[in-house]
Length: 212
Image 1 (tube, helix red, strand yellow):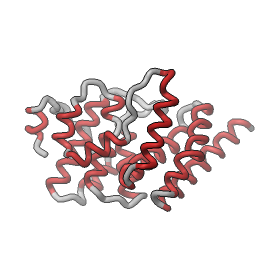
Image 2: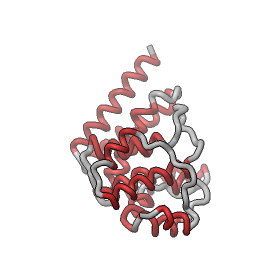
Image 3: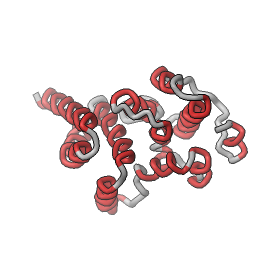
C-alpha cells in the first residue's frame, strides 16, 4: 500500500513514529508489499491514537503493537492481515474522525472486517451491559481469527491491568476473563487458553498482595 494512496484519501501520516523493535522483527520477515502495509498500519495507528495514554500511563500505541507481538510471537499467527488488524484494532472504537469506508479500502476487506468484528459499538452508559453481552455472544459465534485477535488483545490487557493502580479494575478484568474469555480461549487455541490462565493467575497474586 503506497503512502500516496493514503494521502490522496485524506489518511496520510505526516510524522513518522519510530518502529518498535518487536514490530520491526515482524516486518523484517515479510515480502516488500506486506512489510509496507504493516509499517503503514503502525504509522496510521500511531498518528490516530496520537497522545492518548493507557491507564498505566504508557502511550496508547504500545498496546496495539503488543497485541501484534502476542499474535506473532506467542500465538504463532503469521498472517499479515491479522497483524494489520492488531495494529488497527482500537482505531474505530477510540479515535475520532476515522472514515470507515476509506479505511476498508486502504487496509483491505479482510483486515477491516477483523477490526470491525472486535470493535464495540458506541452505547450510552445505561445500555453498555446489554451491548457487552451482545458483543460476547457475537465473539462466540465468530471465526477463529476474530476470536484469536480478541484474545491477544485481552491477554495484553490482563497483563497490564496490574500496573494501572486500580485493584477494582483488576478484579473486574479477572472475573470477566475467568467467566467469559477463558472458555472462549479453550474453544479457540490451547496456547491462548494457557496465556489467559497465566495472566489471570498473575492478577490473583497481585490482588492477594494488595489485600495482605
